[in-house]
Image 1 (cartoon, rainbow, N blue to C red):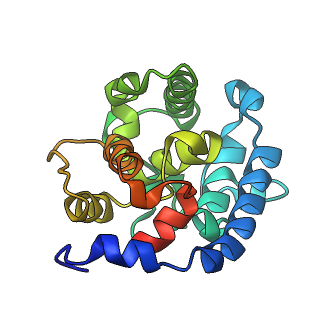
Image 2 (cartoon, helix red, strand yellow):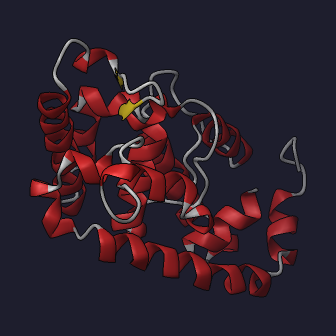
Length: 213
């Protein structure tokens, strides 16, 4: 499997019923995100409901905490640096901001970041996936951004958010990801390859993800 030998035979033997059981849990988590952070509320979503490190300032989990720690079945982005969230408040109380936002006050930085999240969500809804590549700030949080897009528009993405994993899976299926390819674009490339293969006919995105891992 690791060298691509027998992958299609393995797909034919894959027990999709096992993945289907876990998929129900993933869909429940997705609905939880949509209920707590409806798409229509993103234009006015306050920083206090987004940023990791602000949980004590209000009820419930922030968006970033929910996506990293509360939705594992949707695909994991847990672990590593909190920089994946583009901006967050450190335990010291200091704000840590991605390069394009440094030197700004948190609220101003959030308004710029939120605007790019909104542009990405709007572009995907319109089928303009290339427009997301132009959103510079989002490139500093590729895993979170890709998981966000996959959560709100699961028909357009696979629940795989690691750039390294996507490169490996693309190679396994006979594709290639460019060195500068944003994670969401690599995800779409992988999905396109999956849709070309008759072995995956009728499979859900969650089943494909489970098989690949």
